[in-house]
Length: 316
Ligand code: 0JX
Ligand code: SF4
Image 1 (cartoon, helix red, strand yellow):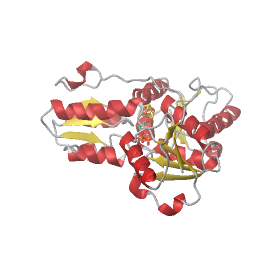
Image 2 (cartoon, rainbow, N blue to C red):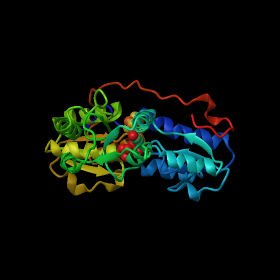
Image 3 (cartoon, rainbow, N blue to C red):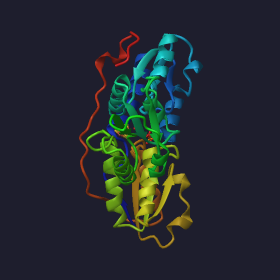
Image 4 (cartoon, rainbow, N blue to C red):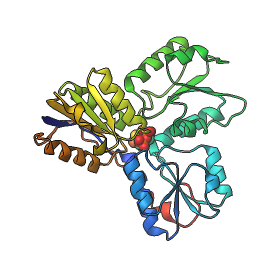
């Protein structure tokens, strides 16, 4: 069996920054570190941090007053920030800068009373955080997940309308939704492309190329990772037998019957160690040394502000 490793794969700049913020906080503060939601959607990453004493919570009310809280890469609503401030929490902001960019735009739309449409998955925390930037009670933000949802939209003023998107969507499906939106609302304004980030785009393009070379794709990522699930969907859409696994232990030997060329990719929140474990396992089953597929070299780095760890209750 030949193993082909997709490129790029695994950690994006936003994930590296978010995890580093938690690790730095553990070193600097000698207090319990609370994280609002899983710092990134990866079971291995979250469990490793739990072992170091980090406590993950879904609600700010679960955190004692005057504690330290880190907001996850996916972002939070304005209301959540207010709740944290009320409890005098020290806030460390690990929200990805690309998600924050969408927050700023939606916030502006809200301040200008422009009715807004967000394309994304209703139950996803990033979407909840983005919706929570739109606080104007006299105007409205609508959420749509697919083309069908467009027909149920009731828009007051078609001339003044904005749209934005979640950062980890399928490029192909989002294009379809945007085209349908523009057909129905020709005056709608939105980002130059969509808000889908560079990491999501690059990993999807790589999987598309990978699908031409292999007869099975393993996507390493957790069930709740949107970007990892989009890689699975894409693999399946190309007609390639594709499976999502959290780690090597999820692999079933029966999947590998008659597979000569197997492709491996990893979501933006999946650490490389999990890829290495899968490769080791396949090699034990007689697979050859893995081949790295050629791909874009990602240079994006998101720095952590020096002010982040000052003792003042700040939101950088
Ligand atoms: O579920 P998502 O893909 O949004 O999150 P995950 O898996 O934690 O990936 C990194 C964070 C992405 C935020 O945009
Ligand atoms: Fe940021 Fe994109 Fe990574 Fe999300 S997937 S954390 S938006 S770089």
